Length: 281
Length: 283
Picture 1 (tube, helix red, strand yellow):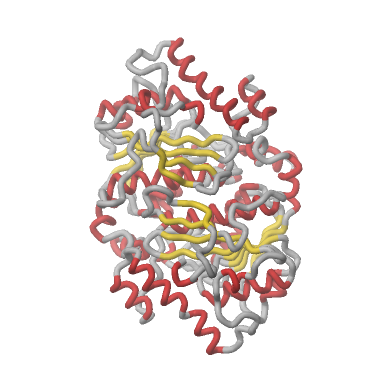
Picture 2 (cartoon, rainbow over the protein chains, first blue to last red):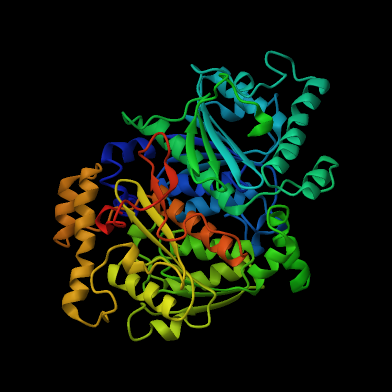
């Protein structure tokens, strides 16, 4: 087993030092949601040699996941995503310790589910769930990675830390400091419709945005964007763990912006007004 | 579920960015992926997921433990198995409607034309320099676009799309022996040795000198971290999708996608070559 670990990750050495590889092995990463972004992030963490992983996901695979979700296979349709993630991580690195929680994250269980992690990657697609995750991580003193995948070819990654501005301030959510009542939840969820409409300005089809806002179709997700964002999210986790001087994570409000329709496809930006309008991300 | 209904469901989330007509072009496309390692294995999987209709995947190797850190088809359970065989099995598990053909061969002068002809695009994902030249040169002769890549330590990558009516691979990258067959051992060695120059350039960028020395002596493998291999695969794949759907790729040669994850400001961008063209030793 010792030889398998050393040999599996031998080709990292030289770019990743042996001490850094050891830090990766001793770290615990929690991934919430293993769909298009979280699935590749889980694979990437396994291939980097992360020693302990916790996967939180209550969904099952369906055919429309296949276009982009690296854990989805025809034989796994209808299977719990968390269990498939566990199998895949174990196949890649049998010495990895992996736990799964097949439940949706809520205000009631968030602290219990996230406690003890060195870093949390939030790869969920529900804006209210995200607020719950980042609030809990902040409270527990754990860094949390935020992601976005937006039509046509846009995405983003940002790392929140207990010392940085909190999530809802950086993304100008109407909910900062408020209890998550039904009204507040509705106000948060409405941002996703604004994001859909803004996407049309960036090149997504109006037809799609109309249908999305009416609840008649799902979010459009391009496979390369979802995968790039997942890889960049795991790279943020890598940077937080190895703490290499000169390789600083993109701590909020710094944003790693992805846009495959721009000639600067991955770029680190700082908002001119100090915070971001989430509708435009 | 019949094939058409399954296909429509699995590609439904592409629509809205790509049109149904563009999706049909992907379904009709014939794609060749040369090499099924860190870059090509991921590209083949991405093709299957995106709904490419016909894929040929070529590789002669079997999986080794040291592949696991980055190769999407490699895991502790596929060790010593043929990369082509595992690719075929995996791709069928992703998209059973795709026609998959595997070829257990390394591309060389004697088989390149036979292998490449009949495809709409070639994704080159091999690691030795002479094979890269042969693949892009043959694709051009056959009138087929090809996407090329290169990756070096610490975390740098290059991707560029070559077209039959555009600048040739060897001209864009300033390679010696333009037009000469690579059956000449001396020329082949000269091209292969560029990789040693790339190793020493990597040292200037932060890779350890002891590694470059060992690499040039044949005592150590090329350093490849997962983040680099995967970003190269994703940007190469995006080029291919843009080309196959009839859109413009990001990096039509001589332009290139430059990846450098140690660049804190702009880690991935499109760049024009420096004056006089690319110096392959720096890529």
